[in-house]
Amino acid sequence: MSLNSARRLMGAFFMSLMLVSTPLMAEGEGFFDENFGNLKEELDAAKEEGKAGVFLFFEMEECPFCHKMKTTVFSQPQVQEYFRQHFRILSIDINGDVELVNFKGENTTQKKFAFEEYRVRATPVMGFFDLDGKLVTKYTGPTRDEKEFMLLGEYVVSGAYKQPGMNFTVYKKNRAKAN
Figure 1 (cartoon, rainbow, N blue to C red):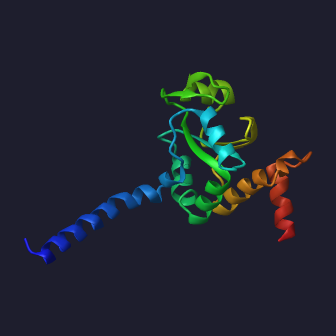
Figure 2 (spheres, rainbow, N blue to C red):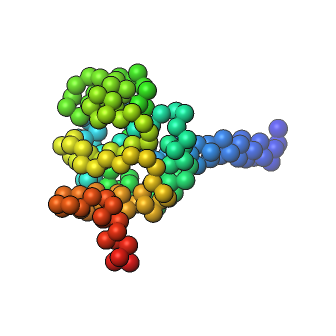
């Protein structure tokens, strides 16, 4: 085999590899941090990395709105950059039997964690947890677009959720008036 043939073959191989991996990234799979099912350790990692907290995306496989979030929102570069800067980003399958260690260090499953600890029955649900593992903001359903999702992240990072009477709807209205 000549050197040029080997280069062409190698180029074709890498091109096909890119074609196979691109749809996965397009679905937002690259948005989530790799984790080993220990949320207590994720809190420690968030603290060490100087993050605002942990973002959990509660989902289930057959959820069309979860798929929409992954393909149209989580796949956006500005969303990925902002959320990676400020949060550990994890996905929880509400039907999952995968074992998990919750924020308190207790063993459970994804399904029990979602339902028993946070009453998640439908998806998507987005939970923002502070560095103590306390749920500070919960959003049910998909956001309209990446701009609304970014506002949701900013709402948490800025600490606006701590202000009396400042829910996310009020925050959005105030931001719209300011712009």
